[in-house]
Image (cartoon, rainbow, N blue to C red; front, side, top):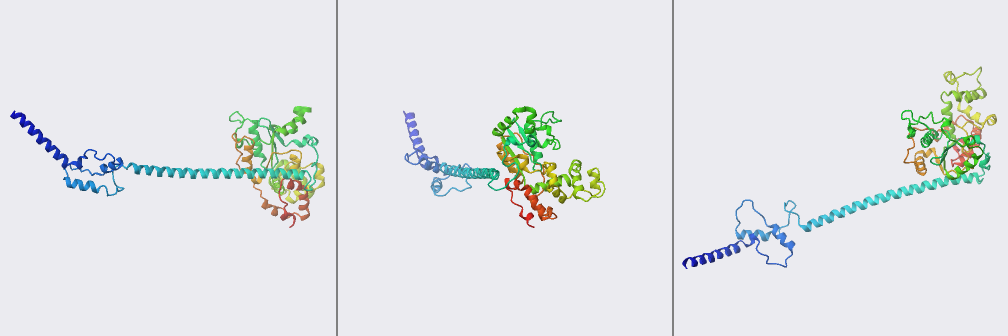
Length: 426
């Protein structure tokens, strides 16, 4: 019995001692949950806010309670290493989402504005094209009181030889009327690539890049199918086929200020030695209007070496000479566009201008639905400018200038180029 009584006393004393320890260190060990209705977040904040020592020594109960209570009032600093409270993380996430939303809104606004600008530009381009086409219709109908040969004739009345500038691509259903000195070399290169009519010697396959097509080859007439060749290919069905293609194919041409085009043609064909043009035209100008005594040099190289070459005034005189009109209807490099492309008989779907070549070319390739196949060549083009007209015509008598304007007036009116008053009235 004595042993049993001793065990009971020891148990009681041990229990009392444990209860005393629990009471003394209650705050340090957290205790039991005596506050079941308390906000769990608040309890977590209290628990997480308790400092922990790294020395291993026990704090006194009073010190522990002071620190525990003070931790409820001291704000958390940015340098704290404890985890961010859930409420704070939620606010940060909301702020981040709000900023991302603002960024998306700004990006959406920019994209909307860009789309709006593109639509606005497209609309402006459409209006410009409609205005160009409407002007041609007005002039051809006689509303502008501009008369010129062939204005009222039907397409069937145009001789075959005058249809040699209408290039046809049956694969892509395109008809292009080329005008010399109006980016026609590059547009012919485009047509060669589309029709696959020229083989590259390096690859043994048709060219796929217009810039790779040698420019001197594209003027070979055998490369292009033109309306003028239809009679040989289709006989009596040729005119019927032309009418069908004109009805269903997309037709385009590019034009240029008529006087600037003349200056460009003169510079290109007579400003430097050109054997063909010297023999066929240059020598004629020199004999008729050059007061050259004796015989002319036989070659352009010899003539240029001797300082003998046509002047711009002789060129204009040649164009105004009635004998020239009787001999031919002008070489294609200075023939009027209305005689090359017949805008009163052919309703073109797109009229481009050399003055706006790049944007017009981009827009046209999209219209033709071939912009995914090629790009318009970006090489240097003829830089003869309208601002040069006054200098080039300075030595031309005013009466000749006005006669020349009458000769090219239909092109000025048809394609909306302003009357060159600075040339005609000075």
